[in-house]
Length: 517
Image 1: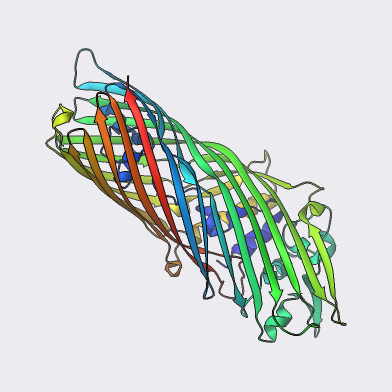
Image 2: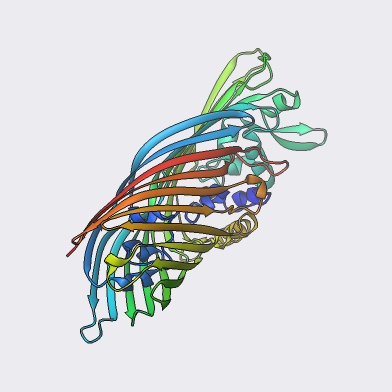
């Protein structure tokens, strides 16, 4: 974690939110989405097939289709997030729309061999939903947000004039701190040091009131074309070309206030705002196979390549400070990052490849025959490995500068050092009662951080009902998602970082309607 500041200093003018752990795994650590049927069985679709969600999990499952089908999966989410920051607890709640896997499937049977079939799927899904709000507030006598600006500037090698230039190398951070005197240079003995004005309060053993509020929105969607082939009802093969489409917005307000009775310690309050947006598009590939040694047994394997995405960040920040004069009065200062980026929000264009993943799966189908009306149900399970520390960043410039090369090299090293590969487990089942089906499922997504102290994981408990009759089907599922994570308001190099432990409960209601034609 201590390499974080080094990254920010190497090429801060192109620095983006992907430099913190929460953002670097934003596009890989999410639960399985899909149709209502897929969600109800815990997302375990690696060997089951017969559902449009197979396009995004194991496209070999598309080979089970012999007819054409249209599917629409609208949903609704109810989100509650609790944050524990330095023993102070807060709760936020919100609701929103979600999109499950929807699209068309065109299946056909070989005219000369009924045991051979193929299908093409055109589908879209929302891989990740970024709509969220997190707030926390507490007293802190340990560290201050301003210290990260002081550390950054002290170790950057730049002087004040360089940082406060109209094209600053540190436009969103230290330039704002220097312009508003939240940080400054002081002489201690024969050495010049960079300090934040809040350090006077901390040195006196007093606490600062800290408050963080971050609202995020958008989503990671994927449009895909998948193909599946059924070879004699024994082997099924498939592949998918995916086009991820990213839209992410983050608006953060962070503030600190002096809680002491001393009106002459140089600091009263500050408020920092950060407006950050990422948009982009990419491409990925998925391959899979399913083997049926017996009619009732299915074994599946799938590999997902990293998504190579072309991303553009738009970034701006402001800082307002109220500092106390020797007479005890407050003097206000303000600055915007636009002052240091030629009067416009900063833009950064770059490439990112996210984590690759592999899936092993098995399913047992009760009383399976070619007549699906005689199937009584199934149990299925997936084991998924995700290489979270495999995410990589690189410059989108035709001729990258040395600073850009150094920045992305260091950033990629931090990604490797902070994250790890993790296993996800999904299990589910269905019982069929003629035209009505009942389903249950469970999913567990393990800690993507190397530091086990963050105690991050995700669990999904789900259940639902389905209806099938004369080519028309309807499914309804409720999935209860529990997420544990760590949220950092800022990071320092010279001491352990303070963070909020978050517990998020999300209730997802997913419906799917469709018909064969």
